[in-house]
Image (tube, rainbow, N blue to C red; front, side, top):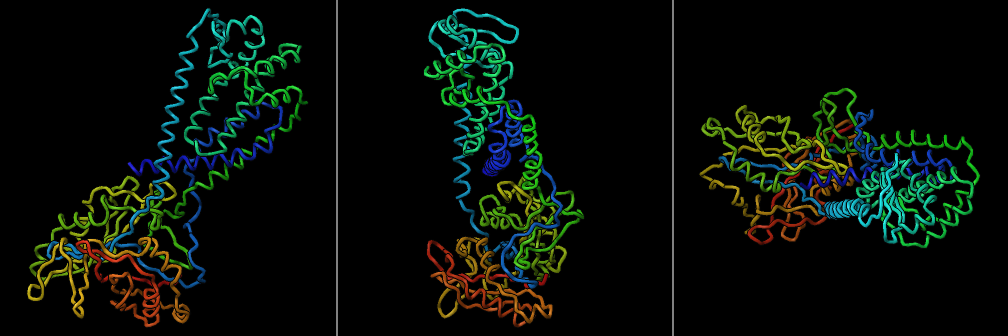
Length: 563
């Protein structure tokens, strides 16, 4: 449900951007010209394009989309994407790290937007229903014409038209009937009511966009200019018609959505346009600005596609201060970095519970004491389903690898990742360790129990009910590492690369201690840089066990790779 609402809001934002980019040039080029048909057509095309463009997917000719992260030159520091690691212990899984919590700020904007849009939609529908009902309500007589129908009312109803119907009071019909009906006939002949319907739709969806309200005023002004021009082309006494407009401007307003004769808010502009000299016909050419403006808008929303159409299996990297997205065949973009990462229903804790309940330690491996660690990579599709499950690093045993693939493939649909307000395909990695507990050393652990290490009579947990978290979540941790990792100059010059696994303890107060290299990168300088950047991290949110803060051991893989 949240994904659908987010997608709707994201499309609405794209519509607003499109409308603004197409409408702003109109203000300077066509707002004051007397070529009303050209101006009106431009505004209507702008409205239609604002609806259509966000749904047009034009592939951009880029192999990768790059985001600036750090100012490094050629050397790069890379580290694994946020991974939730599990260790299978005789069929149970113990958690080692967790993924970041989603922020509620975005949805705090999406939900109010949807509510307001729905309320406005209901109001507009009711207004249209009232207009239709009141056309015939209180009618004294009806006169059918070829293009329209006149409804004469007994009460003092302000004159207006809607679709093929003109409403006028008996008093107005007796004194000013010819001019008023001619004016409303102009609205009907030009089909202005259909413009209002389109405008109402766009205003409802883009209620937050100030430009759509400005465009609405301009379009309604043009409607009146066209209707006035229709009258003046058919009668000679221009001054008498202008005086009628001024006189009727003091009457109470009619329905907002109808074409009312007494639009008092644009009275001065209507009179000015009647007296204004006709604009040079060449001014209409200015409407062609829509072509480059539309092309620019389409390019803004273009989806990066791979030129070769081949799949990339590269991990998330911080390259020369740039993070690259990965693309796969069939012109489908697969992101490795997104604004909102995909999540298992209920969060990572629920995912580990699901794996605990569903994973089956292969009997042969259990009997032979075979252990291992499989790195499973898969794609969380736009609809949340799991696809392209594969082993990117084998556990060393085919049966363990097959079980890892089986249990991951059987997972229910995830909540998909989000990029720029849209659901996207995201590559995800889960390292799963298969490990048999030694009965002589310790009892078997389950996911509901914490693994504990005693150090100087102070307990250090490996698994707790609530894992420690970097301030702001894993996304913030990734950002911190990108901004602070410094590729050793000597290693960069000598093309030395590697991957270090850093282990540390998040203390009860959130501070970092006992930092050490669990697995070396193969180079002392790379290891030292890993230790330095981890030791300089700010305090974390400590882990919790049974309602109390506890010390928790944490591991972080950091990869160093040259571009």
